[in-house]
Image 1: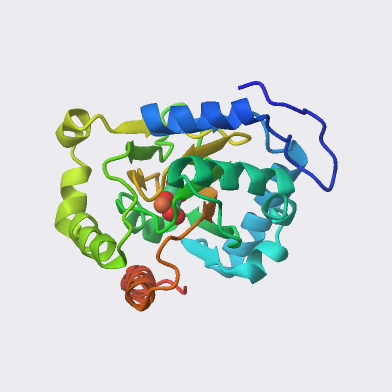
Image 2: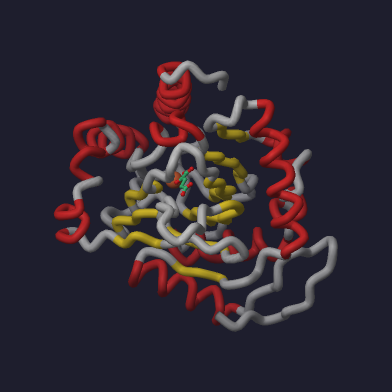
Length: 266
Ligand SMILES: O=C(O)CCC(=O)C(=O)O
Ligand SMILES: [Fe+2]
């Protein structure tokens, strides 16, 4: 996609988009599930992010790890992206187009996923809806050998609408994210029937989708390969709900169990 202002500076890593560009992103997210901004992550940022991941992998015994919260991003080479006004503007404009309301003053929530080792395989094919309306996925490291599985993002586009009630959201998530349901979502026949898309990720691009509406998961890579993505989530309609906080705690406990079951440090 052509962007409004291709000027890149150290402080502002992303080009600002025209309204029409954001409108086109939203239309693609509606129509096909995923919209892509191509070649927008500076090569220097990607290189620094890869060094950061390599150093963290040593600390995590070369096994899967995930980072979230404010501290990791501030200390990482992706900090400029998470603080970018242009990036926030894109996420807010998308939120407004989906919710027909003024975007909240919420922070953009950044997290890092590094799939590696046998624990990385356990963290694959975990189909879920995000708790946030807008998701931006930034691939940092993707296996690219000719016969290597690349860990595509599988998306069931816009299977549902944004849920206004936290309780409805939680009950739906309990059902569609269960182990049995994930086994079904992984089946090629179900993916074909429900028009799921397997999106190969290219580092340098940013992939946008309605995370709360589109069921999604990454495919597995080989345990000896590293696949890493940064996720930027925006706009949780249930942020103030007590039920929601309990459900988030359950989700974190599930991720910890997956890591412990494989005997890895978290
Ligand atoms: O790493 C990926 O491809 C997807 C991760 C994801 O969906 C999430 O963390 O919410
Ligand atoms: Fe997600």
